[in-house]
Amino acid sequence: MITRRCASLFALLCVSIYGNTAAPKPFVPAPLKKPASANHPPTTSENVLALLIQLDNEMLNMAAFAYTATPENKRPMVGPCAGKMRPGLIESARVLPRFKTYLTGKALSCYVVNYLGCDTGKWIGEISEDSHEMFYPFKGARVTIVERAPDRVVADVVEASQESVFDGVYGYAEEGGKVVELPAEEKARETNSSRYTFVRDAAGVWRVADRKASWDWSCEVRDGDWYEAHRSSNAK
Picture (cartoon, helix red, strand yellow):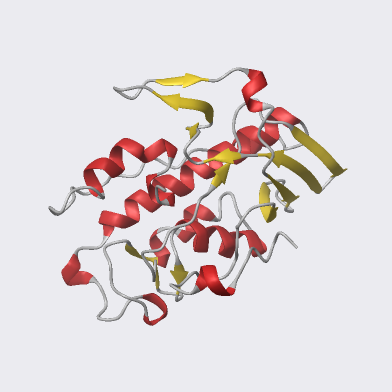
């Protein structure tokens, strides 16, 4: 199983970073994009997918950035939440403002846990080398809007394994990095999903406020005993 940081969009990057014992070259994060919801509120299936795909790409972008952002001589002596110190460590202030462009409330802390790890308030980083499989929305995925109000939208979105989604495209990567999109009948076979809650603030900005998944998406910090002690708290 590939780790969440080595999923889809950054698969080639991870070959050089995670598969190499030499010090990785600093990763330069892509510029923060204006959220898709700015001009297209998540009130249609297409707009829901556009926002969620953009959100996942931003989280993966910053997870890759976190891996090289803090030189070893700048890291604290003890890792986040008394965990083992590893390269994937970054000051919270360097990433949280970007995340808040897309996330609010419970969803903010949940996404941080799943993509970057434990947040002490000053540092964010993983406390375990254990990984878990992630599932992502993709272009052409089935979206069912179950609630639509002026300031709140709830939608069920079908998702696929990180091994099958590349920058929002459901398919597979050929040698050389070209992504081949699979047909609609293949997409229709996917059964995992998440229920997303979107809220609009007083300024008219839409953000993800909650996510409940049919798979092992947890808002708890995952340590080495996580798999024995927990199943997804959001799947209940």
